[in-house]
Image 1 (tube, rainbow, N blue to C red):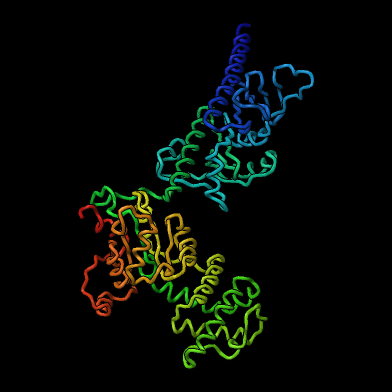
Image 2: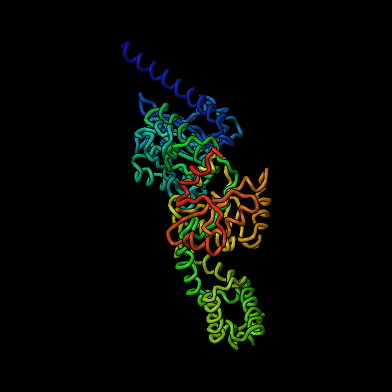
Amino acid sequence: GMGDGDSVRRMDDDDKFIRELVCELCRQFFVAGWVTGTGGSISIRSKLNGNIYMTPSGVQKERIQPADLFIVGMEGQVIKPPLNEILPGCPPPKLSDCAPLFLHAFRQRNAGAVLHSHAICCNLVTSLFEGESEFKISHQEMIKGIDGHGYFDQLVIPIIENTAWEHELADSLGETIAKYPLSCAVLVRRHGMYVWGKTWEQAKRHGECLHYLFEVAIQMKKLGMDFNSPPAPLSRKRSRSASFRHLLLDIEGTTSPIEFVKDVLFPYAARHARSFLSSTWGSPATQAVLRELLAQAQADAASDSSGPGGPAQLLEARADPVALDESLLTALDLYIQRCIAFDRKLGPLKTLQGLVWRRGYESGELRGQVFGDVPGVLRALRSQGVHCSLYSSGSKQAQRLLFAHSTHGDLTPLFDSYFDTRVGPKTEASSYADIALCLGSVRGPEEVLFVTDAVAEAAAARAAGMQTLLSIRPGNTPLAAQMQAFGSTAEFPTISSFEDIEAIMSLDK
């Protein structure tokens, strides 16, 4: 009867609509950069009969025609191949390699549409989370575009490892979809993303919001911002911008507790020096340190027999390369311990400490302690265009290690430059004048704010024309004692937390 004709017509209309829609969306996604180079695809499921419309493999997605599509069932069986006749000598069209992956979302999530994007941001964002299996972001309006999420929620999108062939990915995609019931997408490392929704409109919205959020994450990371922390609260004083363009920071007693260096780092290096030397004896780096240490021991013996000179074995040894023997190792260890006890700032000793620390940080045994108020303030200052740099008596390598493996994660993106005493002593004005030039400050040293716990250093920086703040932290040498020793009554503003920097350095200068 009439009813049958209607339902057939409805089916025909539905079929025509979905075929044209897939082609239209492919063109839009091509322009958006999601499906270039024949990569990526979209498939839509009919609400009327559950048939799934899929694109053929390896075709230019922006040129696809309604007749080019496959119709596939929920088990992946081809219900209807493309409608065009196959020209002689041409290979028959092949179903998209994504088919088995799409089917996981259709079956497990009852999706109405699934799309696969090869956009640059989907690829890059997985590299921000190298070694991790999840992308996370919070405090972004566009998170609301993802079903079941709000502005304050942390959005989590799982990341799976790429495989050489798309069909090999299907199993791990299937397992991940099951493991993350709230997620509407899965990222594939250095490859792209699969994203779905109950309807084609929702799948498209999910795709657009996720691409937007990935782009935000990449840009925020470039700017040294954290895309998982809430925006900083407005400070009481409305500062339009900082009165300095560069922030130069001391480490001990300023960004990090003095006792970390004194009671953790130095003893760690002292304890592990011997085992480090013995396990890396043949390496060029260790041989170079040995040569310098032996030369130093000989110089010590020549100049002063009563000081921490080298035991006899050290004086006879000539490194090139020295054979490893226990008595030499013991003598070396003793010499190193004595140099540390006398707090001698020897080049080779610093190099050796740096090598030992690196191994400690990389193994996870050492974590660089950084005061809790430091990372947030540095991020806020960076977002105002302030460049942050470090100046410490510890080597540049040691500085970088401390912040790369810190108690707050990798903080190295917050720093532009590292300076150590190779630029000059920290108590001489010329060192700071030189640093100001290295930083390329446009108007000169007055654009640099130097924060330190040492009065003598602050005075040298001020003499060079820098702005200065004194850091008061638990365990630092009291200012009164420093002032006495320094013999000056110069007044320096003080801070007990980086949170104070903004209030003191606000524009009312």
